[in-house]
Length: 469
Image (cartoon, rainbow, N blue to C red; front, side, top):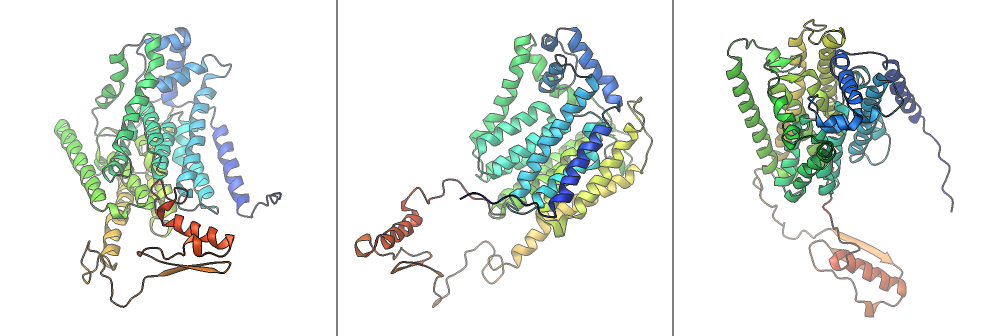
């Protein structure tokens, strides 16, 4: 039997237009040279080309980890302009990003158009377009791998999840904003702890080509340690808490206290998620990731405006999982992120630009409002719903099991095949007839199928945990 021909629904037309518009917008900005391109990316390209391509990786000339430099080195062997090549790397990261956005939303809506709509929205986000096609940054690459790691963890493929988190960490250190979610899944036994070993293994394996080129192990392992202490400012155009208060004095003490407070907040959320693991559904895991993606760069010092990139994307994914409650969150996050990009992009010749299109205090308040909405949805509304549920009400006692009401019968599932009717009471032994009492092959097959569903056959037994939505 041949499959019916594909007939596009009317909703697919605006989605196709949105994807085409995303491509056109990116191509239009291919000629723009940002300050980072002039000061860093083009200089790295020239250095690699002048020192023999991949052989140049034995030198320390960039503050990015080597996986991104592999891609830049590959450009030196291709007949493409350096600016177009750098932008193409970022745009390919955008493409991978929207694929995993689609997959994460499809976990909630396996059928229909919401997953396509989420991918289209992320492809058109101003901060996503500005980060890659305008700025030339590669934050979409580590974010795409991070979302891939989260997706495979939710699909109960822990080792593949660890590989993707390792790929994300190999490109950018900022993926640590999402790693507390993986820690929660490990502590709740949704992901085996052995799968975490894949993360450092992938990072080390990706360092092997640079080691073969002559780079020293200490040189490769110190990249992220040098990035941590590179900046002394409390904020670098990031819409975070340091835009709301004046911390001009005692900067060193404020930095240390801020790091400590951030670690305590993350630990408290991890503990809360572990204690309430009975409600750790797919939607709540996505929501937890969005909370960490906003909370950590909002509280940590020395954050760039680009460090909210993960929050820009995960806020959209979370809003599609809970559209009626979280639709303001991506609007607030995008308002804060997009307008924090503009001061630097407005003057591509300058590395630091202090002009404000929108006051940073207002942008920080918008990001704070988004964080409050996310935390309230994660903790406040969940606890209220739990207290009003039969399991958490005072009648039955919070955390206790509901008692069986005398005289109430268990729900019954009936299956009629041929002349045999099988009855199965939930929670009681199967009362399916034996194969000897079945008078027809169809009845015997039905009895065997029913008995197999009780756990006697590996064909019907679940081998991996199923995540509720």
